Length: 557
Ligand code: VG1
Ligand code: CO
Image (cartoon, rainbow, N blue to C red; front, side, top):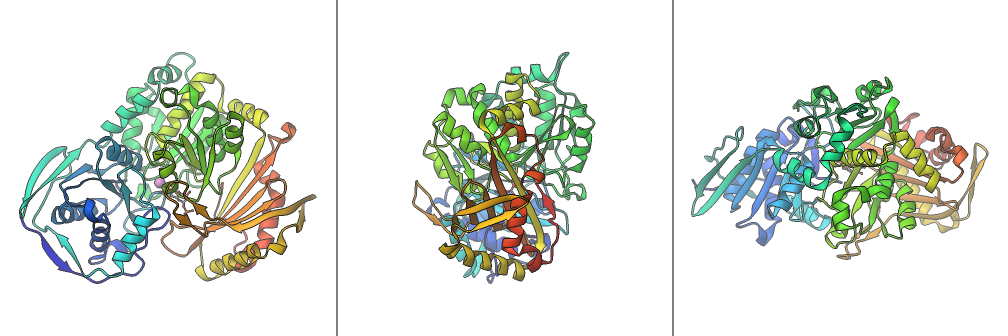
Protein backbone atom coordinates (compact mmCIF):
# COMPACT_ATOMS: atom_id res chain seq x y z
CA UNK A 1 0.00 0.00 0.00
CA UNK A 2 1.18 3.51 -0.57
CA UNK A 3 0.30 6.93 0.76
CA UNK A 4 -0.70 9.77 -1.50
CA UNK A 5 -1.01 13.52 -1.09
CA UNK A 6 -4.26 15.24 -1.94
CA UNK A 7 -4.26 18.97 -2.65
CA UNK A 8 -6.67 21.00 -0.54
CA UNK A 9 -7.35 24.56 0.57
CA UNK A 10 -8.26 25.93 4.01
CA UNK A 11 -11.80 26.11 5.37
CA UNK A 12 -12.82 28.96 7.56
CA UNK A 13 -13.79 28.32 11.16
CA UNK A 14 -12.06 25.02 11.93
CA UNK A 15 -11.54 26.31 15.43
CA UNK A 16 -12.25 23.83 18.23
CA UNK A 17 -14.64 25.28 20.83
CA UNK A 18 -15.22 24.30 24.46
CA UNK A 19 -14.95 20.65 23.48
CA UNK A 20 -13.71 20.02 19.94
CA UNK A 21 -14.88 21.11 16.51
CA UNK A 22 -18.67 20.89 16.17
CA UNK A 23 -20.60 21.62 13.01
CA UNK A 24 -23.60 20.41 11.12
CA UNK A 25 -23.06 16.99 9.56
CA UNK A 26 -23.43 18.53 6.11
CA UNK A 27 -20.35 20.65 6.77
CA UNK A 28 -18.25 17.62 7.71
CA UNK A 29 -19.55 15.83 4.61
CA UNK A 30 -18.20 18.61 2.40
CA UNK A 31 -15.31 17.61 0.13
CA UNK A 32 -11.98 17.64 2.07
CA UNK A 33 -13.57 19.22 5.17
CA UNK A 34 -13.11 16.29 7.57
CA UNK A 35 -9.81 15.33 5.95
CA UNK A 36 -8.43 18.83 6.46
CA UNK A 37 -9.27 18.85 10.14
CA UNK A 38 -7.94 15.34 10.72
CA UNK A 39 -4.70 16.26 8.93
CA UNK A 40 -4.26 19.36 11.12
CA UNK A 41 -5.00 17.31 14.23
CA UNK A 42 -2.35 14.75 13.29
CA UNK A 43 0.17 17.38 12.14
CA UNK A 44 -0.25 19.27 15.42
CA UNK A 45 1.20 16.22 17.20
CA UNK A 46 4.54 17.16 15.65
CA UNK A 47 7.38 14.82 16.62
CA UNK A 48 5.00 12.61 18.57
CA UNK A 49 3.13 11.57 15.42
CA UNK A 50 5.56 9.12 13.75
CA UNK A 51 5.33 5.72 15.41
CA UNK A 52 2.44 6.78 17.66
CA UNK A 53 -0.55 4.79 18.85
CA UNK A 54 -3.96 6.50 18.93
CA UNK A 55 -7.39 5.50 20.19
CA UNK A 56 -10.31 6.20 17.85
CA UNK A 57 -14.03 6.02 18.56
CA UNK A 58 -17.19 7.99 18.93
CA UNK A 59 -20.76 8.04 20.12
CA UNK A 60 -22.08 6.18 17.08
CA UNK A 61 -23.90 9.16 15.63
CA UNK A 62 -24.49 9.63 11.92
CA UNK A 63 -21.17 10.02 10.01
CA UNK A 64 -19.09 8.33 12.76
CA UNK A 65 -18.28 5.31 10.61
CA UNK A 66 -17.26 7.40 7.61
CA UNK A 67 -15.06 9.53 9.85
CA UNK A 68 -13.39 6.43 11.33
CA UNK A 69 -12.65 5.20 7.84
CA UNK A 70 -11.10 8.54 6.92
CA UNK A 71 -8.99 8.54 10.09
CA UNK A 72 -7.73 5.00 9.49
CA UNK A 73 -6.59 5.81 5.94
CA UNK A 74 -5.03 9.12 6.97
CA UNK A 75 -3.29 7.73 10.06
CA UNK A 76 -1.73 5.05 7.91
CA UNK A 77 -0.42 7.67 5.50
CA UNK A 78 0.83 9.96 8.27
CA UNK A 79 3.16 7.47 9.91
CA UNK A 80 0.98 6.48 12.86
CA UNK A 81 2.09 3.01 14.07
CA UNK A 82 -1.17 1.71 15.49
CA UNK A 83 -4.83 2.59 15.96
CA UNK A 84 -7.01 1.11 18.66
CA UNK A 85 -10.57 1.46 17.37
CA UNK A 86 -13.85 0.67 19.11
CA UNK A 87 -15.96 -1.95 17.36
CA UNK A 88 -18.19 -0.24 14.78
CA UNK A 89 -16.34 2.94 15.70
CA UNK A 90 -18.19 3.07 19.01
CA UNK A 91 -16.54 4.24 22.25
CA UNK A 92 -17.92 6.52 24.93
CA UNK A 93 -15.85 9.60 25.71
CA UNK A 94 -14.90 8.26 29.18
CA UNK A 95 -13.98 4.91 27.60
CA UNK A 96 -11.61 6.64 25.18
CA UNK A 97 -9.98 8.45 28.09
CA UNK A 98 -9.54 5.16 29.92
CA UNK A 99 -8.10 3.39 26.87
CA UNK A 100 -5.56 6.16 26.23
CA UNK A 101 -4.37 5.86 29.81
CA UNK A 102 -4.48 2.09 30.05
CA UNK A 103 -2.57 1.47 26.83
CA UNK A 104 -0.38 4.57 27.28
CA UNK A 105 -1.10 5.87 23.81
CA UNK A 106 -0.05 9.29 22.52
CA UNK A 107 -3.69 10.37 22.40
CA UNK A 108 -7.04 9.71 20.83
CA UNK A 109 -9.60 11.10 18.45
CA UNK A 110 -13.21 11.24 19.65
CA UNK A 111 -16.04 11.53 17.16
CA UNK A 112 -18.96 13.23 18.85
CA UNK A 113 -20.94 16.40 19.16
CA UNK A 114 -21.87 15.23 22.65
CA UNK A 115 -25.25 16.61 23.70
CA UNK A 116 -26.05 18.17 20.31
CA UNK A 117 -28.68 16.34 18.23
CA UNK A 118 -27.39 13.95 15.55
CA UNK A 119 -28.58 12.40 12.30
CA UNK A 120 -28.25 13.59 8.70
CA UNK A 121 -29.43 17.06 9.70
CA UNK A 122 -27.84 17.09 13.14
CA UNK A 123 -24.34 17.88 14.34
CA UNK A 124 -21.07 16.03 14.17
CA UNK A 125 -17.82 16.73 15.96
CA UNK A 126 -14.17 15.79 16.23
CA UNK A 127 -12.11 16.18 19.36
CA UNK A 128 -8.48 15.37 20.07
CA UNK A 129 -7.41 14.05 23.47
CA UNK A 130 -3.79 14.06 24.58
CA UNK A 131 -1.68 11.37 26.22
CA UNK A 132 -3.09 11.97 29.70
CA UNK A 133 -6.51 10.96 28.32
CA UNK A 134 -7.95 14.45 28.56
CA UNK A 135 -9.18 16.99 26.03
CA UNK A 136 -6.35 18.86 24.33
CA UNK A 137 -5.45 22.11 26.11
CA UNK A 138 -5.80 25.43 24.29
CA UNK A 139 -2.16 25.43 23.16
CA UNK A 140 -2.89 22.29 21.13
CA UNK A 141 -6.30 23.33 19.80
CA UNK A 142 -4.85 26.69 18.78
CA UNK A 143 -2.07 24.90 16.92
CA UNK A 144 -4.64 22.75 15.11
CA UNK A 145 -6.59 25.85 14.19
CA UNK A 146 -3.49 27.68 12.93
CA UNK A 147 -2.60 24.74 10.69
CA UNK A 148 -6.16 24.70 9.34
CA UNK A 149 -5.76 28.24 8.05
CA UNK A 150 -2.78 27.39 5.83
CA UNK A 151 -3.27 23.75 4.84
CA UNK A 152 -2.42 22.92 1.21
CA UNK A 153 -2.61 19.10 1.19
CA UNK A 154 -3.39 16.05 3.26
CA UNK A 155 -2.01 12.53 3.24
CA UNK A 156 -4.14 9.44 2.90
CA UNK A 157 -3.91 5.82 1.90
CA UNK A 158 -6.97 5.36 -0.33
CA UNK A 159 -6.58 1.62 -0.95
CA UNK A 160 -6.38 0.62 2.70
CA UNK A 161 -9.62 -0.95 3.86
CA UNK A 162 -10.57 -2.39 7.22
CA UNK A 163 -13.77 -3.99 8.44
CA UNK A 164 -14.53 -2.32 11.77
CA UNK A 165 -17.65 -4.37 12.56
CA UNK A 166 -15.85 -7.25 14.33
CA UNK A 167 -13.01 -7.34 16.82
CA UNK A 168 -9.79 -8.04 14.97
CA UNK A 169 -6.16 -7.13 14.62
CA UNK A 170 -4.78 -6.38 11.18
CA UNK A 171 -1.31 -5.33 10.04
CA UNK A 172 -0.45 -3.37 6.93
CA UNK A 173 2.68 -2.24 5.20
CA UNK A 174 2.30 1.34 4.02
CA UNK A 175 5.26 2.29 1.83
CA UNK A 176 8.14 1.31 4.12
CA UNK A 177 6.45 1.37 7.50
CA UNK A 178 4.21 -0.92 9.52
CA UNK A 179 0.70 0.08 10.41
CA UNK A 180 -1.71 -1.85 12.58
CA UNK A 181 -5.40 -1.51 13.38
CA UNK A 182 -6.88 -3.25 16.38
CA UNK A 183 -10.66 -3.32 16.61
CA UNK A 184 -11.57 -3.81 20.25
CA UNK A 185 -14.70 -4.56 22.23
CA UNK A 186 -16.20 -1.16 23.04
CA UNK A 187 -17.17 -1.83 26.65
CA UNK A 188 -14.84 -4.47 28.12
CA UNK A 189 -11.91 -2.34 29.35
CA UNK A 190 -14.23 0.29 30.77
CA UNK A 191 -16.38 -2.21 32.65
CA UNK A 192 -13.30 -3.90 34.11
CA UNK A 193 -12.04 -0.56 35.32
CA UNK A 194 -15.32 0.37 37.03
CA UNK A 195 -15.11 -2.92 38.93
CA UNK A 196 -11.70 -1.86 40.22
CA UNK A 197 -12.93 1.55 41.33
CA UNK A 198 -16.13 0.62 43.12
CA UNK A 199 -17.38 -2.01 45.54
CA UNK A 200 -19.62 -3.90 43.11
CA UNK A 201 -20.68 -6.36 45.82
CA UNK A 202 -22.07 -3.58 48.00
CA UNK A 203 -23.89 -2.02 45.05
CA UNK A 204 -25.22 -5.40 43.96
CA UNK A 205 -26.65 -5.95 47.42
CA UNK A 206 -28.35 -2.60 47.19
CA UNK A 207 -29.89 -3.36 43.80
CA UNK A 208 -31.01 -6.94 44.45
CA UNK A 209 -32.73 -8.74 47.28
CA UNK A 210 -35.87 -7.93 49.27
CA UNK A 211 -35.50 -4.20 50.07
CA UNK A 212 -33.68 -3.46 46.88
CA UNK A 213 -33.38 0.01 45.41
CA UNK A 214 -35.16 0.17 42.07
CA UNK A 215 -33.23 2.14 39.50
CA UNK A 216 -34.14 3.48 36.08
CA UNK A 217 -31.32 4.27 33.68
CA UNK A 218 -32.13 6.02 30.42
CA UNK A 219 -29.32 5.94 27.85
CA UNK A 220 -31.27 8.26 25.52
CA UNK A 221 -30.15 6.12 22.54
CA UNK A 222 -26.65 7.46 23.02
CA UNK A 223 -23.41 5.53 23.29
CA UNK A 224 -23.91 4.43 26.91
CA UNK A 225 -26.55 1.75 26.15
CA UNK A 226 -24.17 -1.24 25.93
CA UNK A 227 -22.17 0.00 28.93
CA UNK A 228 -25.36 0.42 30.97
CA UNK A 229 -26.60 -3.08 30.12
CA UNK A 230 -23.27 -4.64 30.96
CA UNK A 231 -22.70 -2.78 34.23
CA UNK A 232 -26.10 -2.28 35.78
CA UNK A 233 -27.93 -5.36 34.49
CA UNK A 234 -25.27 -8.03 33.96
CA UNK A 235 -22.73 -7.12 36.64
CA UNK A 236 -24.93 -5.53 39.28
CA UNK A 237 -28.04 -7.62 38.82
CA UNK A 238 -30.60 -4.91 38.15
CA UNK A 239 -33.54 -6.22 36.11
CA UNK A 240 -33.45 -5.63 32.35
CA UNK A 241 -36.40 -3.24 32.72
CA UNK A 242 -34.11 -0.88 34.70
CA UNK A 243 -32.30 0.14 31.54
CA UNK A 244 -34.19 1.84 28.72
CA UNK A 245 -33.32 3.39 25.35
CA UNK A 246 -30.14 1.33 25.38
CA UNK A 247 -29.86 0.78 21.63
CA UNK A 248 -27.50 3.46 20.29
CA UNK A 249 -29.04 5.16 17.26
CA UNK A 250 -27.39 7.35 14.66
CA UNK A 251 -29.89 10.11 15.32
CA UNK A 252 -30.56 9.31 18.99
CA UNK A 253 -34.12 8.47 17.98
CA UNK A 254 -34.64 12.07 16.93
CA UNK A 255 -34.08 13.29 20.48
CA UNK A 256 -31.75 15.84 21.97
CA UNK A 257 -29.27 13.59 23.82
CA UNK A 258 -28.83 16.00 26.69
CA UNK A 259 -29.71 14.75 30.18
CA UNK A 260 -31.68 17.59 31.71
CA UNK A 261 -35.25 18.18 32.82
CA UNK A 262 -36.25 19.55 29.42
CA UNK A 263 -34.65 17.01 27.09
CA UNK A 264 -35.14 13.89 29.22
CA UNK A 265 -38.89 14.22 29.92
CA UNK A 266 -39.44 10.46 29.63
CA UNK A 267 -37.19 9.76 32.60
CA UNK A 268 -38.77 12.57 34.60
CA UNK A 269 -42.33 11.34 34.07
CA UNK A 270 -41.42 7.73 34.89
CA UNK A 271 -39.61 8.81 38.05
CA UNK A 272 -42.62 10.89 39.10
CA UNK A 273 -44.60 7.67 39.47
CA UNK A 274 -42.62 6.96 42.63
CA UNK A 275 -41.69 3.39 41.71
CA UNK A 276 -37.94 3.95 41.35
CA UNK A 277 -35.55 5.29 43.98
CA UNK A 278 -32.85 6.51 41.62
CA UNK A 279 -33.05 7.57 38.00
CA UNK A 280 -30.28 8.61 35.67
CA UNK A 281 -29.74 9.69 32.09
CA UNK A 282 -26.63 10.38 30.00
CA UNK A 283 -25.77 12.47 26.97
CA UNK A 284 -24.81 11.21 23.51
CA UNK A 285 -21.16 10.47 24.30
CA UNK A 286 -21.69 9.34 27.89
CA UNK A 287 -19.78 11.96 29.83
CA UNK A 288 -22.79 13.80 31.30
CA UNK A 289 -25.23 12.54 33.91
CA UNK A 290 -28.50 13.61 35.42
CA UNK A 291 -29.47 12.05 38.74
CA UNK A 292 -33.04 11.99 40.04
CA UNK A 293 -34.40 10.62 43.30
CA UNK A 294 -37.80 9.12 44.05
CA UNK A 295 -40.72 11.10 42.61
CA UNK A 296 -38.26 12.80 40.24
CA UNK A 297 -36.52 14.66 43.07
CA UNK A 298 -33.96 16.66 41.10
CA UNK A 299 -30.33 16.55 42.19
CA UNK A 300 -28.76 19.71 40.85
CA UNK A 301 -25.33 18.85 39.36
CA UNK A 302 -23.66 21.41 41.62
CA UNK A 303 -25.22 19.70 44.65
CA UNK A 304 -24.39 16.28 43.27
CA UNK A 305 -20.75 17.28 43.16
CA UNK A 306 -20.83 18.56 46.74
CA UNK A 307 -22.53 15.43 48.10
CA UNK A 308 -20.02 13.17 46.36
CA UNK A 309 -17.20 15.36 47.68
CA UNK A 310 -18.48 14.83 51.20
CA UNK A 311 -18.78 11.06 50.75
CA UNK A 312 -15.82 9.88 48.67
CA UNK A 313 -14.39 7.94 51.58
CA UNK A 314 -16.94 5.16 51.05
CA UNK A 315 -15.45 4.28 47.65
CA UNK A 316 -12.47 1.90 47.35
CA UNK A 317 -10.66 4.05 44.79
CA UNK A 318 -10.47 7.03 47.14
CA UNK A 319 -9.65 4.83 50.13
CA UNK A 320 -6.59 3.86 48.12
CA UNK A 321 -5.59 7.22 46.60
CA UNK A 322 -6.77 9.57 49.33
CA UNK A 323 -8.59 12.79 48.54
CA UNK A 324 -6.17 15.36 47.19
CA UNK A 325 -8.42 18.27 46.39
CA UNK A 326 -11.55 19.41 44.61
CA UNK A 327 -12.36 21.64 41.67
CA UNK A 328 -15.33 23.09 39.84
CA UNK A 329 -15.79 25.22 36.78
CA UNK A 330 -16.36 28.89 37.52
CA UNK A 331 -20.12 28.98 36.79
CA UNK A 332 -20.76 25.85 38.89
CA UNK A 333 -22.58 26.47 42.17
CA UNK A 334 -20.21 26.87 45.10
CA UNK A 335 -21.70 24.10 47.27
CA UNK A 336 -18.53 22.02 46.93
CA UNK A 337 -16.44 24.92 48.26
CA UNK A 338 -18.09 24.46 51.64
CA UNK A 339 -17.23 20.78 51.74
CA UNK A 340 -13.63 21.58 50.82
CA UNK A 341 -13.39 24.19 53.56
CA UNK A 342 -14.90 21.82 56.09
CA UNK A 343 -12.41 19.10 55.19
CA UNK A 344 -9.49 21.50 54.95
CA UNK A 345 -8.83 20.48 51.35
CA UNK A 346 -7.96 22.72 48.39
CA UNK A 347 -10.69 23.84 45.99
CA UNK A 348 -9.84 25.12 42.50
CA UNK A 349 -12.03 27.26 40.27
CA UNK A 350 -11.32 26.82 36.55
CA UNK A 351 -12.95 28.01 33.32
CA UNK A 352 -15.74 26.04 31.66
CA UNK A 353 -14.60 22.85 29.93
CA UNK A 354 -13.00 19.66 31.19
CA UNK A 355 -9.60 20.42 29.65
CA UNK A 356 -8.88 22.80 32.52
CA UNK A 357 -8.93 20.04 35.14
CA UNK A 358 -6.23 17.90 33.51
CA UNK A 359 -3.07 19.59 34.76
CA UNK A 360 -4.36 19.69 38.34
CA UNK A 361 -5.07 15.98 38.22
CA UNK A 362 -1.76 15.13 36.56
CA UNK A 363 0.08 17.00 39.29
CA UNK A 364 -1.73 15.10 42.02
CA UNK A 365 -3.71 18.00 43.42
CA UNK A 366 -7.20 17.08 42.35
CA UNK A 367 -9.40 14.04 43.02
CA UNK A 368 -12.97 15.12 42.27
CA UNK A 369 -14.34 17.83 40.03
CA UNK A 370 -17.43 18.85 38.16
CA UNK A 371 -19.44 21.32 36.20
CA UNK A 372 -22.98 22.59 36.58
CA UNK A 373 -23.69 21.25 33.08
CA UNK A 374 -24.27 17.70 34.38
CA UNK A 375 -20.57 16.83 34.35
CA UNK A 376 -18.99 14.93 37.23
CA UNK A 377 -15.76 13.02 37.37
CA UNK A 378 -12.57 12.17 39.17
CA UNK A 379 -8.92 11.60 38.46
CA UNK A 380 -9.63 7.97 37.53
CA UNK A 381 -9.64 9.30 33.95
CA UNK A 382 -9.38 12.77 32.36
CA UNK A 383 -12.96 13.20 31.13
CA UNK A 384 -16.20 13.61 32.97
CA UNK A 385 -17.91 10.27 33.33
CA UNK A 386 -21.68 9.75 33.42
CA UNK A 387 -21.76 6.09 34.43
CA UNK A 388 -19.03 6.64 37.01
CA UNK A 389 -21.24 9.33 38.60
CA UNK A 390 -24.16 6.93 38.94
CA UNK A 391 -21.90 4.28 40.46
CA UNK A 392 -20.57 6.90 42.87
CA UNK A 393 -24.12 7.83 43.87
CA UNK A 394 -25.10 4.19 44.32
CA UNK A 395 -22.03 3.77 46.55
CA UNK A 396 -23.21 6.66 48.71
CA UNK A 397 -26.75 5.27 48.91
CA UNK A 398 -25.45 1.79 49.74
CA UNK A 399 -23.30 3.30 52.48
CA UNK A 400 -25.82 5.72 54.00
CA UNK A 401 -28.94 3.62 53.42
CA UNK A 402 -31.02 6.76 52.87
CA UNK A 403 -33.05 8.14 50.00
CA UNK A 404 -31.53 10.77 47.71
CA UNK A 405 -33.79 13.43 49.13
CA UNK A 406 -32.74 12.53 52.68
CA UNK A 407 -29.09 12.63 51.67
CA UNK A 408 -29.52 16.07 50.10
CA UNK A 409 -31.49 17.58 52.97
CA UNK A 410 -28.97 16.26 55.50
CA UNK A 411 -26.19 17.77 53.38
CA UNK A 412 -27.92 21.16 53.31
CA UNK A 413 -28.52 21.05 57.07
CA UNK A 414 -24.83 20.55 57.65
CA UNK A 415 -23.37 22.92 55.06
CA UNK A 416 -26.21 25.28 54.14
CA UNK A 417 -27.67 25.33 50.65
CA UNK A 418 -26.34 26.99 47.53
CA UNK A 419 -29.38 27.58 45.37
CA UNK A 420 -28.35 27.37 41.74
CA UNK A 421 -30.01 27.80 38.40
CA UNK A 422 -28.93 28.13 34.78
CA UNK A 423 -30.97 29.73 32.02
CA UNK A 424 -30.06 28.80 28.43
CA UNK A 425 -31.20 30.92 25.53
CA UNK A 426 -30.41 28.67 22.61
CA UNK A 427 -29.90 29.76 19.03
CA UNK A 428 -30.16 33.52 19.53
CA UNK A 429 -29.02 35.80 16.75
CA UNK A 430 -25.30 36.37 17.09
CA UNK A 431 -25.29 40.12 16.79
CA UNK A 432 -27.55 41.03 19.75
CA UNK A 433 -25.93 38.31 21.86
CA UNK A 434 -22.49 39.77 21.16
CA UNK A 435 -23.87 43.23 21.86
CA UNK A 436 -25.13 42.09 25.25
CA UNK A 437 -21.73 40.64 26.16
CA UNK A 438 -20.02 43.83 24.94
CA UNK A 439 -22.31 45.91 27.17
CA UNK A 440 -21.61 43.64 30.12
CA UNK A 441 -17.88 43.87 29.46
CA UNK A 442 -18.19 47.62 29.65
CA UNK A 443 -20.13 47.30 32.90
CA UNK A 444 -17.55 45.07 34.60
CA UNK A 445 -14.66 47.20 33.34
CA UNK A 446 -16.09 50.21 35.15
CA UNK A 447 -15.07 49.68 38.75
CA UNK A 448 -17.29 52.53 39.89
CA UNK A 449 -20.11 49.97 39.64
CA UNK A 450 -18.69 48.23 42.71
CA UNK A 451 -20.79 49.19 45.72
CA UNK A 452 -23.96 49.73 43.67
CA UNK A 453 -27.11 48.25 45.15
CA UNK A 454 -29.87 46.44 43.29
CA UNK A 455 -33.23 45.64 44.84
CA UNK A 456 -35.85 43.22 43.64
CA UNK A 457 -38.62 41.25 45.35
CA UNK A 458 -37.81 42.78 48.76
CA UNK A 459 -34.15 41.80 48.60
CA UNK A 460 -31.15 44.08 48.13
CA UNK A 461 -27.78 43.01 46.75
CA UNK A 462 -24.62 45.09 46.86
CA UNK A 463 -21.99 44.64 44.13
CA UNK A 464 -18.68 43.46 45.60
CA UNK A 465 -16.65 42.20 42.62
CA UNK A 466 -17.09 42.47 38.87
CA UNK A 467 -14.89 41.08 36.12
CA UNK A 468 -14.59 38.91 33.08
CA UNK A 469 -13.16 35.73 34.56
CA UNK A 470 -9.56 34.96 33.70
CA UNK A 471 -7.54 31.92 34.70
CA UNK A 472 -3.86 31.21 34.99
CA UNK A 473 -3.13 27.51 35.06
CA UNK A 474 -1.16 26.91 38.29
CA UNK A 475 0.89 24.15 36.65
CA UNK A 476 1.93 25.43 33.22
CA UNK A 477 1.13 29.11 33.68
CA UNK A 478 -1.05 29.28 30.56
CA UNK A 479 -3.56 32.12 30.65
CA UNK A 480 -7.20 31.93 29.54
CA UNK A 481 -9.03 35.22 29.41
CA UNK A 482 -12.67 36.26 28.91
CA UNK A 483 -14.16 33.10 30.37
CA UNK A 484 -17.38 34.71 31.58
CA UNK A 485 -18.84 37.88 33.04
CA UNK A 486 -19.04 37.72 36.83
CA UNK A 487 -21.07 39.98 39.06
CA UNK A 488 -20.49 38.95 42.64
CA UNK A 489 -22.44 40.50 45.52
CA UNK A 490 -21.39 41.13 49.09
CA UNK A 491 -23.27 38.06 50.38
CA UNK A 492 -21.41 35.84 47.89
CA UNK A 493 -24.33 35.55 45.46
CA UNK A 494 -23.19 35.45 41.85
CA UNK A 495 -24.60 36.32 38.44
CA UNK A 496 -22.63 34.92 35.50
CA UNK A 497 -23.05 35.32 31.77
CA UNK A 498 -21.20 33.58 28.99
CA UNK A 499 -21.72 32.46 25.41
CA UNK A 500 -21.70 28.75 24.67
CA UNK A 501 -18.70 27.34 22.85
CA UNK A 502 -20.30 24.05 21.79
CA UNK A 503 -23.10 25.17 19.48
CA UNK A 504 -22.91 24.87 15.72
CA UNK A 505 -25.04 27.83 14.69
CA UNK A 506 -26.18 31.15 16.13
CA UNK A 507 -25.39 32.06 19.73
CA UNK A 508 -26.46 30.37 22.92
CA UNK A 509 -26.46 32.62 25.96
CA UNK A 510 -25.98 31.00 29.35
CA UNK A 511 -26.98 32.85 32.50
CA UNK A 512 -25.99 31.29 35.82
CA UNK A 513 -27.24 32.30 39.27
CA UNK A 514 -25.74 31.00 42.53
CA UNK A 515 -26.83 32.11 45.99
CA UNK A 516 -26.15 30.78 49.46
CA UNK A 517 -28.83 30.20 52.09
CA UNK A 518 -27.78 29.30 55.63
CA UNK A 519 -31.29 29.21 57.12
CA UNK A 520 -32.48 25.61 57.26
CA UNK A 521 -36.12 26.71 57.25
CA UNK A 522 -35.61 27.93 53.67
CA UNK A 523 -33.81 24.88 52.31
CA UNK A 524 -36.84 23.16 50.82
CA UNK A 525 -37.85 26.22 48.80
CA UNK A 526 -38.06 25.93 45.05
CA UNK A 527 -34.79 27.29 43.61
CA UNK A 528 -36.79 29.28 41.05
CA UNK A 529 -38.58 31.10 43.88
CA UNK A 530 -35.46 31.50 45.96
CA UNK A 531 -33.49 32.94 43.04
CA UNK A 532 -36.24 35.03 41.47
CA UNK A 533 -34.91 38.40 42.70
CA UNK A 534 -31.41 37.69 41.35
CA UNK A 535 -32.77 36.39 38.05
CA UNK A 536 -34.72 39.58 37.60
CA UNK A 537 -31.69 41.72 38.49
CA UNK A 538 -29.58 39.79 35.99
CA UNK A 539 -32.14 40.14 33.21
CA UNK A 540 -32.53 43.87 33.80
CA UNK A 541 -28.84 44.57 34.15
CA UNK A 542 -27.97 42.67 30.96
CA UNK A 543 -31.06 43.84 29.04
CA UNK A 544 -31.18 40.30 27.75
CA UNK A 545 -34.90 40.40 26.99
CA UNK A 546 -34.73 43.74 25.20
CA UNK A 547 -31.67 42.84 23.15
CA UNK A 548 -32.52 39.28 22.13
CA UNK A 549 -36.28 39.55 22.08
CA UNK A 550 -36.43 36.35 24.17
CA UNK A 551 -38.86 36.55 27.05
CA UNK A 552 -38.24 32.98 28.23
CA UNK A 553 -35.16 30.74 28.21
CA UNK A 554 -35.11 27.55 26.10
CA UNK A 555 -33.92 25.44 29.03
CA UNK A 556 -33.91 26.08 32.76
CA UNK A 557 -31.74 23.93 35.00
C1 VG1 B 1 -20.94 23.12 27.55
C2 VG1 B 1 -20.98 23.17 29.05
C3 VG1 B 1 -19.61 22.85 29.61
C4 VG1 B 1 -19.14 21.50 29.07
C5 VG1 B 1 -19.19 21.50 27.57
C6 VG1 B 1 -18.84 20.16 26.96
O1 VG1 B 1 -20.07 24.11 27.05
O2 VG1 B 1 -21.42 24.43 29.51
O3 VG1 B 1 -19.66 22.87 31.01
O4 VG1 B 1 -17.83 21.22 29.49
O5 VG1 B 1 -20.49 21.85 27.12
O6 VG1 B 1 -19.71 19.16 27.39
P1 VG1 B 1 -20.59 25.51 26.49
O7 VG1 B 1 -19.38 26.21 25.96
O8 VG1 B 1 -21.63 25.18 25.45
O9 VG1 B 1 -21.23 26.22 27.64
V1 VG1 B 1 -20.03 17.86 26.40
O10 VG1 B 1 -20.78 16.72 27.30
O11 VG1 B 1 -20.97 18.66 25.19
O12 VG1 B 1 -18.62 17.44 25.65
CO1 CO C 1 -20.84 14.94 26.37
